[in-house]
Each structure stands twice: as C-alpha cells, then as structure tokens.
Amino acid sequence: MTTYDREDFYDSDATQFSESDDDNFEGNFGVDPIDDLDQWIPPLFYLAKGSLQCIQNNKSSLENLCLACWEKGMHPHPFFNGGLCHPCKERLLHTMFSKSADGFHLYCTVCGSRSNACVNCTSSNCIKKYCVNCLNIWTDYSDKLVNNKSNDWICFLCLPEPNLLLQANHDWAQKVLFFHEPLSVYGPRALYWKKQPLRVLSLFDGIGTGLVALRKLGIQVEVYYASEVLTAAATVSRTRLGGVLQHIGSVGEVTERRLEEIAPIHLLIGGSPCNDFSAINRFPKDFYDPRGYSRYFFDFVRVLNLMRKINGQYQHLLWLFENVASMPQHYRDTISRHLDCQPAVIDAKNFSPQLRRRLFWGNIPGLFTVHAEQMTMDGEPLTLDKSLMPNSGRSAAQAKIRTLTTNTNSLLQGRTENCKSRKDLASLFPVRFSFQQDELRNADVENDVARHSKKGKKDSTSGINATDKHQRTVADEDDNQQTDVLWLQEIEHVFGLPRHFTDVGNMSRTDRQKLLGHAWSVPVIVSIFSNLKSYTK
Image (tube, rainbow, N blue to C red; front, top):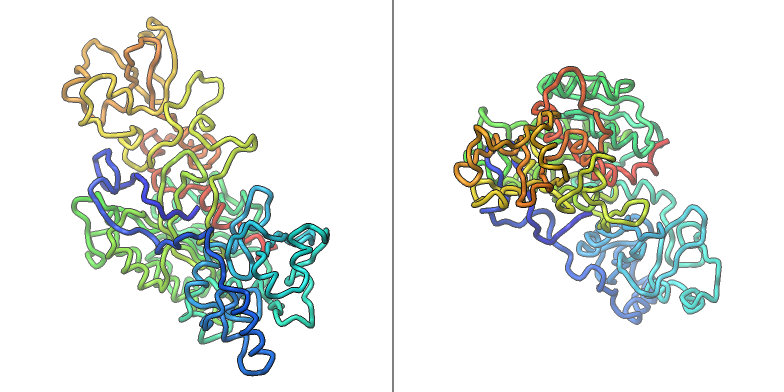
C-alpha cells in the first residue's frame, strides 16, 4: 500500500544502535499526498455538458480537455480518447489499480474518483468501475444502471459505442505503460511492448527476491540476469532458484558491451546499498565520495540509460529502483532528479507482520496504487503469530515487528539502554513461550539463541550489553513466561520466503540474517509486480 501518514519505522544497515530511522529526523517522504482521495467528486454535470456541446460544434477538441475536471488537459488519458490535467493524472496514477475485496476496482476508470453510486462492468474479463458522475455525462441511462434496473452492462472499454463521444483507445493496455513513464522519455518517440516471457536484469540482486516474487505470481521468465558481489547471497539464489537465473558479476562489470550481449531486457530492477542513505547513519558518505556506498546509485542510472538506448523504440523498458524511506530530503531529491520521477512510499506492514517502509521509483503499472491492508485466507490480519513456527508453543508479543536489518539488535523491539529492569528488557522481545522453571534451566542451546542463566551473568538491570542480551531469553516476573527473539525460519517467513530458504552450506545465523536484512519484502514486490501479469504470457 502506498501510504502518506507518518508512522514509526526503523532501518539502518550501517548503525550499531537499535533505534528508529526517524527517531531524530524530520522530513517529508515520498510523493506529496493526495488530500481527500475518497471524497473528491468531479465538477458539475452542466460544465461537462457545456464542454461537450463545444466539441460537437467543432469549437474544441476532447484531447485538449481533462475528462475528470473538464479543465485544460495536458496529458493523454490512458483509457480513452481525451486528456487529463496534471492533478487528475496524479490522482488516476494512485487509483487506477486499487481493488476492493470483491476484486473490482475501487475508483472510476474515467476520472479516478470514488463514489457510493458506481456501476461494475459485467463482462467476465473486466473488473473496471464507473462512477455515477461520469455515467450521467456519457450515457442517457445512468439511472437504470445505478438502480440495478439493468442487470447487464458492458463498459466503454469492452464494448465501445460508435456513436458516443467517449471513445476507448484500442491500444489502452500499452498506453497504461506509457502513462507511468516520465514525459521526457516517451515524448520524443513511440514505445513498443509485446506479450512475451520476461527478460529481467537485477542489479544488487541479493538472494533473488525479485525472481521469487515473479514466480509467486506465475509470470513466465525467459532469463533472469543477476548482478551480485556477495558470494553467500549468490550461493543462496543459485541453489534455491537456479534455472533461468544467471549471475553476471558485479555492477561495475555490467558494461555497454555486456548489455548489448544480453539485450533486449524487459524489466530492470535494483536497490543500491542503503548504508549512507539511512537517516541514522551518523557518518554518511556523500553521493560523490568514492569511499561510500551512495555512489552505486549512479551505476543503476548508467545501466538504465544504456538499456533504454539499446532497447531503442522497439522494446519498452520497465524498471524499478528501491531504497530506504528515511533518507534525508536532499538525497531523495537527487535520486528523483536523476530518475526523472517521484517515488512511491510503500510499507511492508500492509502485506506482512513487519514495519518496513521503502521508497520505490519506477514505471511499473500500478506502482502508486493505494492498497488496503491484506488479510489471510480466513479474513484475519497478517500478524506475527502467522509467521511463528507451528507446534512450538511460541506466541507473538505484538502484532507487527520493527524493521529487520543486517544488525542483530534489530531483533529487539527497542533500545536496551533505556531498560531499567528485567521486565523492561523482557518487553523488547517479540516472542513469548511457557516452560516450567526447571525445564528452562536445563534447556539446551539451540538455534544459536543462548538461554538466560543467573549464575556467572551480569545483572540485567545494570550495564546491559545490547549485542549479547538479544541472543538469550530473559525471564519475565512470571517464571513460567519466557521471552525469545525470532528464529531464522520465522524471519524468512516474515519476508515472504519459504522457511529454510537461506539455510545453504554452513552459513551461521548472523550471516543468514545479514542476507535477509538486505533483501526485499517479497509480498511488497508481489504487489508491485501483480499488474505485469497482463503484459506477459
């Protein structure tokens, strides 16, 4: 879900402290909010009718009018022969793929507004919806449709009416792709897209979560080129995914000549290292500092521009770039300027039990779509309990957990420095389980989680060591109620991965968590890629 309200969220791959990215940071993240999205209603019926009368008298053109507010249109409408003003284009970008629980779109296909009186298309392959305002403007039988007096109605896209001024674009599916492109890209030349299995290039690939998401959606992938320098990450993705996945070395080795060899590419994805972008990194390096990680962003820009050139006008390039939402405003502005678009802000809390707020730049259809919080098959919220190992006697102490990063302290749900008692420390652990006291004292150390023992240990109320304490359980005031951190299998499930996905070779718990901390949240990427199913075989 693209969110605009400010929430507490956490992240840093470069800090040794367990704190939020925005604990001491103020800023405006993501695109500017669209106020009163659900309350907006297009202008009066008579304004539209007057404009249509001018068109019929050849005094005006529908392409020069906004089909939503009937002001001057500056952008082409993706579905119909007409225009959109800039505010209405932004509104339609945020609403055109939003769906309700019954699978139909939430907002009007023409104007992007939400009305209590809407009509769904009854075609078996169509899920589009039209508001009463637009139906009043474009039809003479809107009352019958709204009052359910007409059981069957095929919409303007599925069955165009030849005598109607509102004419559907015959190639509207491709125009939706161009609708998400910056004007500077698609303006000078025509772009082309053909339904076929995807050829994907993933920069800074990590453990291949992009390919995992595509496979979950059932999208055919012809080849998946992965650029990754970490041997452990490449080993995991090659072992678990194999098949179409081919590693092509570091991003520095992805030269123009190499890109020409693997062209064409349909989808380019990546998220450069976020160490120096995170707001709580106390000593960040600038974009142009050769010692820092920020400079790798320009490798993505370089590959993006080269791939557009190599693909030419015969292959449209879809792309997606991701990074942390806590970055300072001037960093976000620099990235937006080079990518020629603003980011969407998407929080994994709407798709998983984890707070993981990220910025996504790109031209994927539906990237800016407003999503409702997803539920389980039983209609229940996605809480941490669903990710805990079954039959383990473990229960979640909270519904959602903070961002899991490469830092082991992120397993705790707060800062240990602020704890004044054992009870305060116990409250930082996300998992509870019950054992008899004698069983707890004799429990074997498994999963690299050390159990708490009073003998020979430092008192938890003084000098708590953040690095050591999170690795062992801490007893609450009730001796039978114990606390624990998440197991690796549970962390993998939180990220939307199969349990034991990173259990490859003899990797330690710490190394596996580092790989997961760099990874994308698979449910978020699945949501972003979901609309690509209409553009692939």
